[in-house]
Length: 185
Image 1 (cartoon, rainbow, N blue to C red):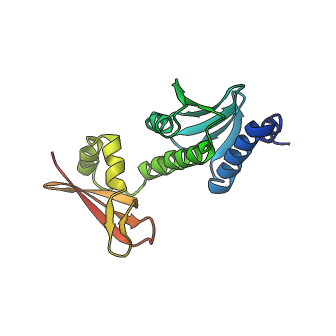
Image 2 (cartoon, one colour):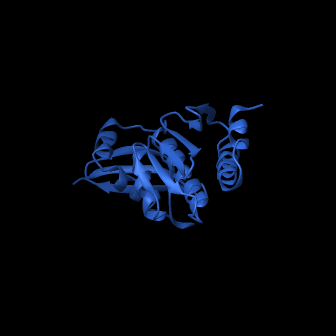
């Protein structure tokens, strides 16, 4: 029997429901991500990130080393408190599981996009690295596709331009070619 399954079965009620939903989501959406029971909590380790969660007595804990998403959880789930590398969510939060799934998807998608092997221009990479992470995410999610309109760019490469840098990649929705120019400051 799988240790994560044993852990989930050790809880009843809302704790079991939340754990079951999140473990099932991770297994279905990201079967290639390593699943372990680390420090007595289901943990999913990607190439440059992890997410984990645990049922506590009075709250549910969501852990990640991607600290940019923790304030997002707190903003969306008002009864949430933040700790070192974690968000503590009250069981009374009705939309918590959906929010935690969305945040997990954001972490995985963000890190998968960042490890793209199609980066082709070191000068463009240096320019892109100067852009704050939150602005990078806004740019990635605000690309025009002639078929879909505003979309997210995926599988992109970076190219230097004398006025800035260019992201060239694919539309997340239709797979068509898209590009986004980023001006130098």
